[in-house]
Length: 412
Image (tube, rainbow, N blue to C red; front, side, top):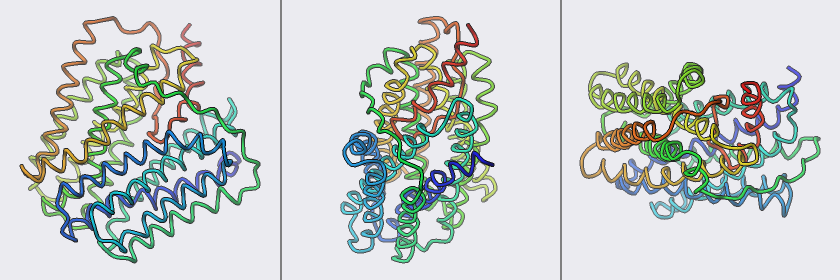
């Protein structure tokens, strides 16, 4: 309880940020469809979000060093709030794309600052519990953001104003805390090649994870509309995906710690391809079947990033952990930026099942590459601890690095 109270301001900011800025993506997809945007234009909105997200991940540590944590956090929240509020002032897909760059910038920047603050406050004794609560809060906020779509009216000023209020409210817990801000962490160097050097399979897997997750989160509502789901059903469809992924973390983590992680990555890709087929085949089977398929899809796809990062860190030295995490995040962003637009083009020209065909093909390619890598070199002698790794900022590696090193030391 004392731990929870100590980090209450940080965790409350995470929840409000997720509900506000995190709720924009599904609302934009449904609103864009209601306003007559083409499917490809809706896809560009998702790509624009991840473009802003990448800029925020890179820029936030530098801005913290120039103006401090609280001022930088306020600037990023203001950026996101303005982007949300401006939606109903200019009804144009390209203008909305610029606004979504602002929301992506807001999420990445705010998470970077929150994680820098969290890193400075945790100790070796509290790190495990603090990260456990942080993951629960992050997943809970994401789940709540998806469910909000069921009660928000599409293309409504009131709906966007509510999200803007929630985003703006994230200012209060962090900026009014009496705790002194920590020292500004050094920004990690961005070396994408480091991920490929340590593990080509992990590098490919995080790209596939970006392709999969971004397509479903950003274009999934369009798929729901195409197959006849109502707004409240689309909310449950997206929530089932998040919940399925959350439930997968413990069993997949246990398997990833026990067996060769390359085999686990291949198994998850096989499961992802099967889930894609099941989602398409069950589209007309009623809401329960659709929600079950979405949960299975989340169960198979969401752990992919964490298993891939754990596998990459098996081959890394302690001094490389922060830069390796940043490199993996960069590769994830590459896949996430391209994916929504490509998926939306597929839906526009070939129908709703095209999105899942794209995801299935990317996972099939990963299966083939994984088999090739298993033949190329043996599994590592020791493993780092599997952990659910939020895709939030380039600084997340600082929070998780020591736990990985302790696992390796124990095995030695």
